[in-house]
Amino acid sequence: MLEVQGKRRYNGGIYLVLRESNMTRRRLVVGNWKMNGDHASSQKLLAEIVAGLPADTKTDVGVCPPAVYIAGLAATAAGRVHLGAQNVADQDAGAFTGEISAPMLKDIGCSLALVGHSERRAIYGETDALVAARYAKAIGHGVTPILCVGETLEERESDRTFKVIDDQIDAVMATSGVGSLRQAVIAYEPVWAIGTGRTASAEQAQEVHAYIRSKIAALDADVASTLQILYGGSVKADNAAALFSQPDVDGGLIGGASLDAASFLAICLAP
Ligand code: 13P
Image 1: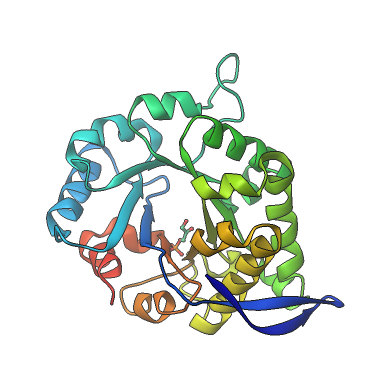
Image 2 (image 1 turned 120 degrees about the vertical axis):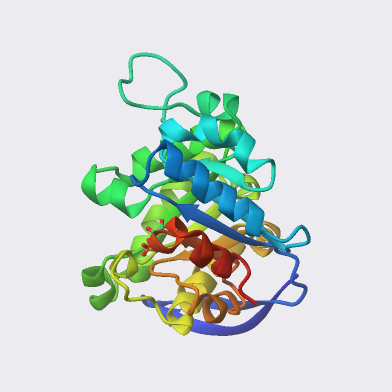
């Protein structure tokens, strides 16, 4: 159940600040390995993560290895860690050199796929429209998309954070509809916090997470109340607990610290 806790002004308008009165969302922590490691190190890292996860953990855990290693990691994941891809094609099959489709991911036991990571947007020119098309394919084939959104430092400093997030989410809502979020996850990753060691404060993260939830609640309060919203950007063992304790932060998307089993496990097991 979402309750209205207050109102905030933004861009000439007003949005509602909502509070969850009945927390039902599970925590989710996903490691994004990016383009790192090799066959042997991937196996070792995942085996250590699986071995270190207590059987009764209340946190769902996933990793997104480089695509070539995913299939070979299914046995090591042992059903205890979800496997995810770092991207997914906007097409099902055909002459799309270099792309990997949602049916292919499904075929090898991959249940998650990042879409719209800021490195894809900034380095490879992925637009909001392309990200929305990729998201739609993941949804259509039962692969859970983790839709990454977030602003650059320049956008934050010019007070455009919410506008950027609006555009990134609106493109997806226009193609797939708010109901698709029942099968999806959103990750807020401020670009200025990725790989920089400069984490958003827990309050900065909460402010944007609350904004995202209220935005979705305006479309469908029920969907908003169950939507998992992850924070990503220099999450480490020593700041995870503060970030995850925020009411609208439901877990994390972890880059650098997910490449070390002990650090990643400490984040997964943060109180
Ligand atoms: P870092 O944790 O290395 O900042 O990366 C975050 C990220 O991009 C996860 O997708």
